[in-house]
Amino acid sequence: MSYARMLCVGLIGVTGRLVEVEADLSVGLPAVVLTGLPDTALHEARDRVRAAVVNSGCDWPNRRITVNLLPAALPKHGSGFDLAIAAALLAGAGELPAGPLEGVLVLGELGLDGTVRPVRGVLPMVAAAAQAGVTRVVVPLANAREATVVPGVTVRAVDSLRRLVDFVRGADRLLDPPVESSPPVPAGPDLADVAGQRLGRYALEIAAAGGHHLVLFGPPGAGKTMLAERLPSLLPALSDEAALEVTALQSIAGVLPPDSGLVRRPPYQAPHHSSSLASLIGGGGGLARPGALSLAHRGVLFLDEAPEISRATLQALREPLESGRVVLARARGTTEYPARAQLVLAANPCPCATTDRCCTCSPLVRRRYLARLSGPLLDRIDIKIDLLPMRAAQLMTTQAPAESSVAVAARVLRAREAAAERWAVDGWRVNAEVPGPQLRRAPWLLPARDTTALRNALDRGTVSARGFDRVLRLAWTIADLDGRDRPGEEDVAEALQLRTGEAGPAAAAADRPQPASHGFGPTADSAIGPAGSAVPR
Ligand SMILES: [Zn+2]
Image 1 (cartoon, rainbow, N blue to C red):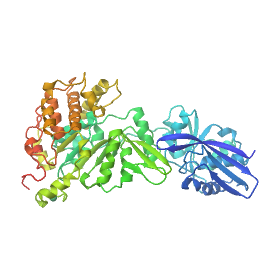
Image 2 (image 1 turned 90 degrees about the vertical axis):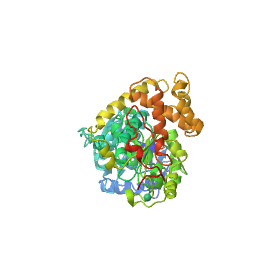
Image 3 (image 1 turned 180 degrees about the vertical axis):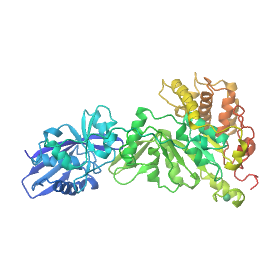
Image 4 (image 1 turned 60 degrees about the horizontal axis):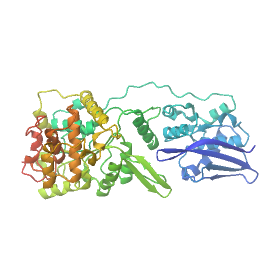
């Protein structure tokens, strides 16, 4: 027989589809023809496979070889088809019996010496195959741990084409996936390290509990980055479903460490402000790759020095933040990635980004600088706060030792559970996901007496219509954290202050939030100068 076929998987975004790799060997001038919409990397498989076959000690069939990838309409990319192509070709040439690999998914890239190299996206590929009824897979050794995460699949690993050939001939065994050594999950940075910053810590807790986006204004050294990178430590560990999504995305992006299993910690991404649009949102040649936004899916995306980010990039964030997904259209097809990340923006009060008296920026320059952030993106952010330089803030709170992430995370978890239970019927997990109209309808409509301040703010134009709903969501989160079954007047007022926080730019210090219930009186936090105000410098 001069025909054989193997099973492989093609990926579009995070969705995999079973691909049949056919090899036909016929009489004619020796050549290898590859058909079925391959991209460049896949075209080069012809050369890699030939070298790998010869260097593995097999005979290269000197015939006309046609390799076809089905379904032909599905664009295929990458080097993960190499091993399946080699196996199909050798089976077609009669070098190998095809039986042992029938119905088995075969994944792997070949080196010229015949070694099997790891490929990206093994987890979503194996998951797709399992969904299509495949129960046995052969993957590169470095990807084997990742593949075992998929339930109902027997995983075997290979390190070389030679091993696969010997196995099919019955002369050797395939490798077992590395056993989970359950290495201790390295603890991320802890909130206990953050001295002072009561308002910052409290805002972080609310953001974690309700899934709210957050913007931090403050001079260099105020601890904006310190706070942001501790937000993941306040979030609950990823559920099975979320962990699969996050691990699949990291696998596709090629950032999943070798031999790693499911990612359980909420991811944290902090791209530099000079990052390109493609690296932030996703993109690249051929079929687009996930960007930092998708790698922060179910976790935190931190954008430091946000006013320095190009306007186009900031605008491009808006739609995915609303919809929770990124859709990238390319010539070869449309790719979609999940992107339900919690956004934390940080901004210095002025472009020179020096501290204290060194700043010589005029009020106009400062206002213009922060204005780069304003507009629709800022309108989608629930919490806006000002932070003081760390020194002064530390002085404010020497009485109590700082709480650890574990303690705060326990409160966050309780609040999240309360919210999830309330919205369970509609399937929302956190308050930030609840559509505004829902909160303005019975039974969730708050009594008029509790929302007077908020309605006045809307009438005055201090909050937008979108902002109105965001304040309501925040109020629910504050109530959840305090263990009350619905927000009262104080919660709404506090939410309004956090939202209009007037946190940075144009706010007057007098309008700063002074939430009574948490005792942030006119603290140092509120004394920071809004842009262009008369704060001594
Ligand atoms: Zn300045």
